[in-house]
Length: 224
Image (cartoon, rainbow, N blue to C red; front, side, top):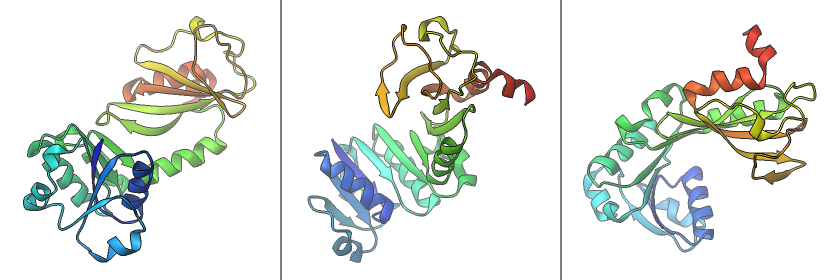
C-alpha cells in the first residue's frame, strides 16, 4: 500500500515507522529538510516542501496514493491537505490528525477527511477507560464522524451477566465486534456468555450511543 504522510514530526514519523515495519511504501512530506536526518527512518521516501501547495502534491504523485495521512501539528494544514487529496487527486482514503479538540467538528467529509484522529480525545478516552467501569467510553470516531468505536467494561452487578450475546437485543446501529476477557481478545459468537469484567467493543453510530449506553447501564442511564 502506498501511503503519503504530510508532516514528519513525532506523530508523522511514528506512523511512518509502524507502516514501514508492515512493508508499506511510505512517502513523507515536510517543509523542514533537517527532519530527514533526525527521523531515523529507514526505507521511507522524502519530499521537502509545503504539503498545502498543489505543486508539491503533484510532485508527490498523490493521485497514486492509497492513503493520505495529514499528521502535522497545525489543524489548518491537515484540513487543507485532506481536502486537496480528495478533490484534486481523488485519494481513496484520508486520515486527519486533530490537534485542538475544538476543531474536531470540521474534520469530516466536507473537508475531505474520512477518518479523524483526535489525539487529545483518544488519550482522554483511554484514561476514562482505565477508571470507568459501567460506562460507555468512546475510543475513536470513524467514517467522517458518523460512527465510533466504543468500549464498555461490564460491572460485576450488571443484569446482563450470564446472558448470551445472541439473546441480547442490541441497538440496530450497534455491532459487538470484540470481547476482551482476561487480556485475551475473543471474536464474539451468538453463544458467548457475558461475564463480569468483560470489555465489550462496539462499532456504533454516534446517534445510537445513548441507546447502547441505556441498554448496558440502565441505572446510570435513568439517572442521566
